[in-house]
Image (cartoon, rainbow, N blue to C red):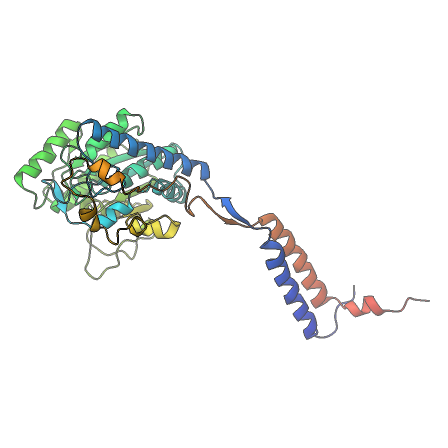
Length: 401
């Protein structure tokens, strides 16, 4: 084989570049599947459908007890609570709570759990509050869809617009879903939540109500004198139920301080989603998140829905412009909170939750890896021929006499 004696001609390099562009844009791009199913598609759909069914069961249960759907719950889920109640531990915006009502968030959690390498038979420790009941449901369903086992500790109190109806707290919702066969387990222990994890500024009535709810649910009460002791108590409970194995992940949902801890004022906040590197995290008070991280347990942090909505192309359910409402506050004027038939009034708005299977978490553009590999090999061979082989020698040599 005769190799090229000198430099490659500029026209040859231009020709190679043009051929490369043709291969990429003319062949690979045309072979792209624009709406291909992503990894774990079937599990994602199953989790979202089960979450949607759980929402329906809770709404039906609430209505069967004669408790009306709030006027500030335009999607009629029964999962939007009161602005204020005896067990409301902190403020929150209604927009944030509306954004959490998409059952497709369970599909996002399936993907996060797979990324954390959660597998069938694994145990996942979970810390929840009453602030985002749909996020709690979506995560528990996602974990069980993978065949893993959630071990849950709850802070029963809730911020505004969450599970802050003392007749229908998070522990009540768990019981309804367990009885319906939509989740297998439930919380193994619970605290009041709020300030110091002991109810904080709640009234004596509110604290007493939460203690009664926990007692009637039959789970262990966590009532330590400090946040650190509360976090240590939670770790002891998790360890007692680990059955000699390590937890595959720890999931924090909501702002329970005993779970997520307190950061120093100038420290970076713990990122949303999956995190495995916690060395730079600077805590003023360590919660379960930090304690699990010290053991090398992956952390899935879910403080709210917004980060997941943006990343995975889910709709913003607080955007009500297409229904003629410029702002969430318009709900008060368009649907009277004093209405005796709130369900009928909100029905007139025709608000619908997103369909299952919509969003980039389920489908997206997919290239043919096989075709791309074949073309890469052929293009590499072409480059070698043009750059290294003396093509003129073989094309224009005289035949030997």
